Length: 297
Image 1 (tube, rainbow, N blue to C red):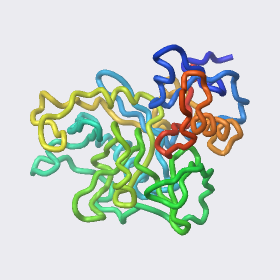
Image 2 (cartoon, helix red, strand yellow):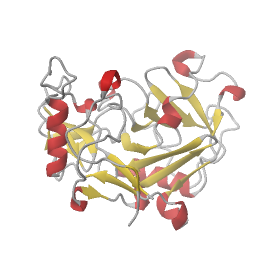
Image 3 (tube, helix red, strand yellow):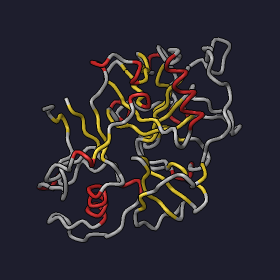
Image 4 (tube, rainbow, N blue to C red):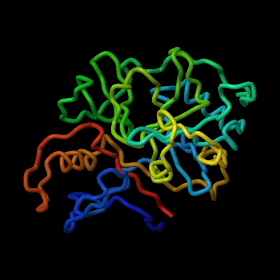
């Protein structure tokens, strides 16, 4: 039987002393009894992107149901080794960490191989075909918010889109709506910039290794861009999970967001009945909920 390295064990969350609930911004939480095996899903290795940095690894689950063209381009870039040796080029406090080609705007920029140069905007999609597990929230940006297959989602009744929550992966773009192609990507490392929803393509969510991005030194240039090569963090490589040897693939699971356990989890985060709380707010925002993740070794 595999051993849990970091596991979600079921609700309610146990808060201890003055550091109670200190892991609220993480994807892994501690709970009382293990949920049934059926309450978890194993992501498709072909949708897991492994970003390897000198100081650690970040594992990101891609979301082809919401950004199929961008996801396909990202996979092409990864499989053709485009990202290898590039760098983290930006770390803006309370906002994002971004990586790509430091020479992207010059003549020495790296060729993107067989990947598409431009992609039609995938800022939202039709609601039809998406099953959203809705949460009770007076959201400022959408009529309905909830989760679909582990991703935070919003809808206006006709369209559905991924939301800019902590740990979400976005496709950087310029002024033109079709200028994003996956050659530069970012992850939300600070507050939830929901005003970006429906204005830029979101393509996935960090499942593991978030600390390897959120703790990067902040850039000293405008918008947190690094101003010298010495400030940047080099990318060792980026690979898709199904391209890695089996022994290098993470044994990782995500709690099913259509499960009873996840429903209970959302309720426990909405109505804080633990002894530590003096006044349970009784409300929650979409970006205050992180579908739990566990790794089995």
